[in-house]
Length: 234
Length: 387
Image 1 (cartoon, each protein chain N blue to C red):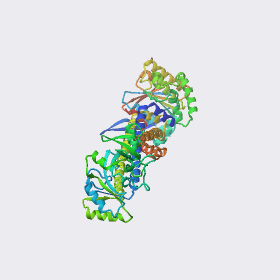
Image 2 (cartoon, helix red, strand yellow):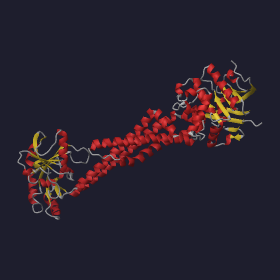
Image 3 (cartoon, rainbow over the protein chains, first blue to last red):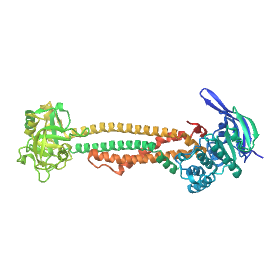
Image 4 (tube, rainbow over the protein chains, first blue to last red):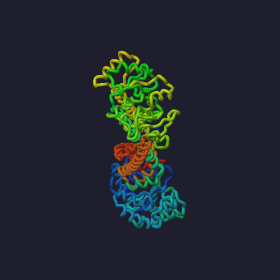
């Protein structure tokens, strides 16, 4: 079976003044579709950079990144934008909801970037907000929501376009442990119900335990890939 | 994206107000400056074109300005000149005159707002132009010579309006007006003239003007009206040969002075306009740059969600366009009020705004495009890392 994500000798260097930081040092990785993955590792190990490479948010200095059989490392800016719009949903640690848009608008805007009409996008947004339990918060602004609710909006925004891949960068990092547990449980449920591949970055082993596979990362390299329990360890 | 742009404008009101104010101030300044310049040039042209064939002979040291003020010639000299030129002039339309600025001009290169003109009764037309040709007293009023009043004054149209404003009551024949500490009775108000000096004049008998200004035996100039079309050359030759300390100011001199004045004025105003435009562009660019920088992360998120570079730039430009349009319209309206207040004349027109709208909107778009383009080139990952 062809992997959904395939990375081959991926390197990423950042010039920092007179020196160069090697964020990724020849990453080799293969991930199948429909599964729940966690990348764990210490801060500064390159987890987020790896996620950005997979999510077409940045380009590797060298190496190849294949997504659903397509060589995304060859794509130009326009091609990468189209990939992000169509195939990838993002969930960020700091939620990154737009403060001037309502909950409904924050979710529907992702569909509008795909060319959906405003009304159609809002109807689909409402469906997803209902699934994450926020149908009573449609007209609220992000500032009026709790941290957990904001992350639920971010999840709805990532999933409203039915992506084949959801990238979650420390999705529980800004939440208390109980809310964090609820959020990863929701992600797990979404993974089972929709079949979307979920790749989350975390440094919390308990949160990582909910995934099917855990990839350990250190100093810009994959140091291990092993199956997990698939249940929250709390 | 228009929807998103409008939401941004409304929700980020401090930033929006700053840009709208910048554009409005720029638009107001430009329209006010060019409006005043247009008005100035129009009045200066009218003033210069209103030549009535008068020849002012005045002290050489007074230069070629009209009306000459400050440097006097003796009445004896003026009388000698009038006598010597008698063969070439129309006696009733010629005479001695004393000028004194009661109120300074509102704008540069214009005659005083109120000017005292002392002239011998019976020779008023030497200054105003002949009744048949140029200007005459309005119905119900009369010249100095016909008046039975002890201290008569004949007012130009604008002088009457200025005095009405200052005294707070209507000035008409029979009204007492205080002038430099002495009361005069208005005996006549002239019809509007193309000559601004005539419009602004308060004409009183020469003797009373001399007494009022404590200048007995002195006048500012002698006005000579040529007897025929060729006589002005004879007058010119006569002055050059027999009166070397005097100089001749003709309609041509006034026109040339006005042309020079207009040129200098236009250059000055153009420089000010360019500085205003540059300052406004800098302000708009700075505000846009700051707000775009401040929104780097937000733009990074939009790009991560799949917004194309064009959509991001389009949204930002759309915002700037709406703000600049609002600023231009507010600035145009404000300029209309300022002009109406400053010039006491309604110069406001939608056409005026429309002619500067492309400049204001174009400039704002130009100033806003650079930061928008710049930010759209950042990789989404980099934008998300931005603090």
